[in-house]
Length: 294
Ligand code: A3P
Image 1: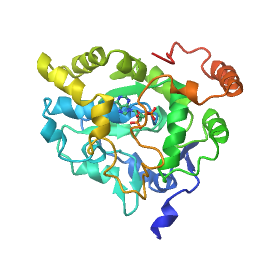
Image 2: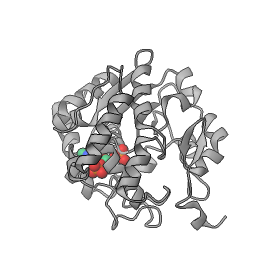
Image 3: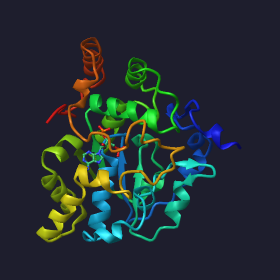
Image 4: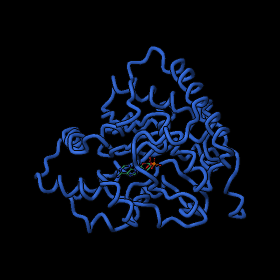
């Protein structure tokens, strides 16, 4: 297959969820993923702080050893389980080749998670971010990361986002689905906004969940190394090691702004009002609450 055919294609539906077409094609391989009991799953809707928490966890696993965490790009240290693009990447195979304990990244909604992760009762860290900031971040990501279909205008993208017609489907279903699942499984549910507000508090929550102790100076070192400005400069964390064909940082850098409340710079008043009305309907009845700025 011609590589250019891989990019900017329409999404394909798997059990009602739109995914990159190459993932849809390889779905049986994804479903067959073999988890190990000591795997830690990092689960997020795209653009919710996946890379941030992944870098934090790799540093925790390596006791704050910065050099060890420079051994490879974040997308190789924490493989993206379901990402299969023929000739480019296969998350399942990458994970097979990793020694335990593994860090595993997924963007799948809860109902699509391969069953072996439940059977092995793997610990899961979920990170959620408010919908409006995710929509904005996702729009710029669609522009720079060519695996996605063309985003169209912001207005068009926002419409698709609200209707769940973006890669990995509905934000509303994703955050609510994982929130419900937390009642029965070992899931630590974190919020991007809390991490922005007090990263140390959130890092200590992660350590407690992992039943791991680290000395204060190592904790502070990890916090420093995972601050936005340091990660933005770090080639093993900022996705600059990805080919330009796949991600063009001159269109929009992967490490874009890293703030809460950027939606205010993007939404028109009319978009805001429409979004809020739709949001209330979608989120009715859930105990899950978001903060939209810090
Ligand atoms: P913005 O586009 O709003 O800047 P993901 O890793 O899930 O794709 O999420 C990417 C978003 O997280 C981007 O948001 C990126 O800038 C932000 N991000 C990455 N590392 C961060 C950090 N250390 N602190 C704050 N935000 C971070």
